[in-house]
Length: 294
Image (cartoon, rainbow, N blue to C red; front, side, top):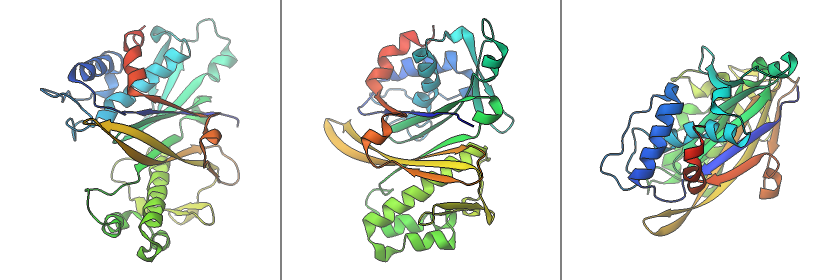
């Protein structure tokens, strides 16, 4: 099936004022009632750091991305609705008015939202409902947490989410840079797949195994067939307290195409991404807030 994948990535590349947070929060409260995000930005000048951990600021921003995407398509807010499956998979259904039945059936937009620290993302595809809902996005920043901990200790903290084979890919003797990069690739792939299938919280990540050298994947020791995995990195320049810092993120997309084999696609430069990934920043989002309710 030919369902094109599109991804929007939004960087929270500067501190955001309480007034701006309020605008974002109120928009989501009005237009995305299913999100049910608690307000948590009282007496605060910025929210990328001070509104953690409940809720993470990316949650509010992410919920705005479907509104922005539909606005970009020039579809009025009254002409579409957000739908969800029993296991939490979202899709957008447009009004069938003035649309031929066959076109209506092909107009469903499946999407998934993800965020980590300064980066928010939305992956989407269009087609029949059953074709488009199994789509997921994983984002993992290439850094250790908490700050100052060794890469070896950080990797060890995720050992319970990896299989014995995957642990050999992040052996400490490979060096910190290789270990961190490979760890983030594995975690972002697993997150993307888990979200694409709509697994509940508490799912045992070690039930999944990604053999990166062989470009293959298994679940409960059975091959994962029919999946397309795309991987790319996002480099951000983020201003915090007057200082610009560089942040790197590993991103992974998972989409079930129903093909005989699964496929891994690696995108190593910006030019590769131009056809299907769009980068925007918080200023662009704040600017269009008044138009997103129309």
